[in-house]
Image 1: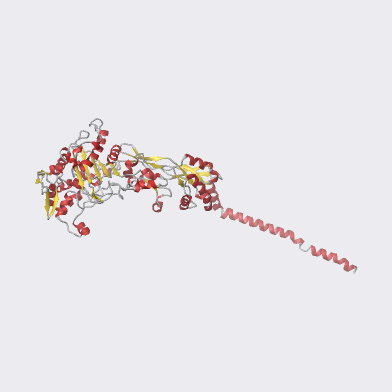
Image 2 (image 1 turned 60 degrees about the horizontal axis):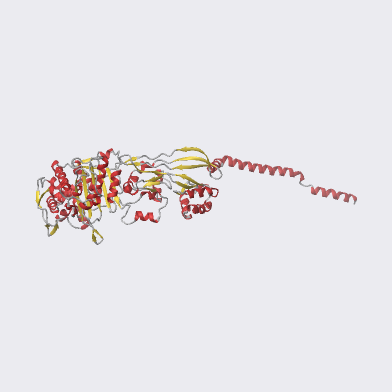
Amino acid sequence: MTLLQSSQPTKERDIRTVGRSLQPLSFILLALLLVTGIGARLAYLQVLEGPKLRKRAESNRVRMIPKQPERGNIFDRNGKVIATTRYPRSVYLWPMAHTKPAWSVVSPRLSKILDMPEEEIVDILEKAGANSSLVRIARDLSEAEITALKEYEIELPGVEVHTEAVRFYPYGHALAHVLGYTRELTAEQLEERKKDGYRLGDVIGQMGVEKAYEKTLRGEWGGQQVEVDSRGRSIRVLGEKQAKPGNDLHLTLDLNAQLAAEKALKGRNGAVVALDPNTGGVLAMVSHPGFDPNIFSKQTLSKKDWESVQGKGFPLLNRAVSSVYPPASTFKVVTATAGLESGKYSPNTVLQTFGSLTVGGVTFGEWNHKGFGPLGFAGALAWSSDTFFYQIGRGVGGRTLIEWTRKYGFGEKTGIEFEAEEAKGNVPDEAWKRRVWKMPWTVGDSINMSIGQGALQTTPLQVAAMFAVPANGGYRVKPHLLKDNDVASNWRTSLNMKPSTIKVLRDGLRKVVSEGTGGALRVETIPPAAGKSGTAEAWKGREKANHAWFGAYAPADKPEIVVLAFAEHSGGGGGSVAAPIVLQVMEEYFHKKYPGKYQKPKVENSQQKTPSTANRRRN
């Protein structure tokens, strides 16, 4: 028993010590597994994931700040700045500095500071995408807004204020249609232009010179590689690529003539165009009603802003190149050319004029209802006799009249840089009339066309270019705006007119001013001028409201400027309404170019009494 009793404790000791000899080994194996796992993870992170993680860390520490290029300046022919750059401060946000849910924290604070709808901020960020670099949220910050952003900068990580280049037009309305404007790309434009390096928030020329010379004016983006701290504040610049500014443009425009045209047209819908008749360089181009192109430099447009550009009269429409009208009696220049060049009429031709002319049972009236007696070409131009030119139109026939209409450039674009904006107008012919009216061409159509009425449609720029032909001795020129455009300046197409035809035209147009309907220009404040009036019958709703035209060039013996004025639905005649507009532009041009050579106007042109009561007539 003793043996049995003595063996029991020994058995219990053996049970308690089972496996103790294996514990050190287990711990060693576990430790090895842990070390191996950590090592493997470290190896994975360093070897396989290393580049990716380094890039992520670098992106949190280093940022790329894009630098917008300055748009090229635009100058008039004398070196005066007419489009340049201003430097407002704008607020930007780094979408990549936040997770998307974090936008909902930053956006409300920005919304209150900037007085800007939170939804608009979020929309801008979503369009940019979470991986985008700096995105502009608002422009033209006030001092109060800048102070508030500084005060809350801890709550606004990734929000920065930068100075940026914004387009500025120092003369506002006066050059709106010819210069155009810039505006941020629309979503559709951005999609089309991404391949050309455009980005969200970029601006682009939307009309006029800004659109025509977008590639020249735009420049190239640059940027800075900046190291930032944990709050997103810049510590140092690591690298930089300078933005390349756009190229400057020097235009053919004469700022003095442009401002005079804007002032003269004020209050009337219409257009004024001034050209160098020898080169085609555009000296002035004004359309009314107008708009202030500076409003498009704003981040967002107010209701009032939109009303100012989309309101009554279509302010964005450039009537000088985009609208078409019957040229009325200014077109008698073409009819006279067709008659003289046809060989059916000589420079010495004299025709009896009448109170009316009946052809094919249709009566066509004379504007003064009684006629002028016998007239030659020069006298018929001077007094704008309708019945004289009815007879010329009937005599040469529609085919010859249409041929010379096209030779003068009507029915096609002039070639000015505004390709997308310029209208062709319309030169009706047999095929057109059959297609549109399902009727054949008649003698009556030729008679209507002979005085610039009927279906003939022209732009003010085309009519100005027509006056350049007799002014320069019989050549078509290409209207253009770029001063150094040698190709356009030297582009001259001869109409192969007989010298006698050119002489008759120039004598007749001179008589318009010296004796006839252009008496408004018979003054000592400008050199002797030549020109032609026109009044196109037109209706505005149910009321008759005629269009008024007047085109002129000066000096008559050696022309250096053509001015064409058009007043839409003026209700008056070309000599009484449009001619004084032409006079104001010419006075400004010649007084600035030749100081002291001509008398200064004694009274406001709009109130001047003209030497001839003939100005108050229809033509």
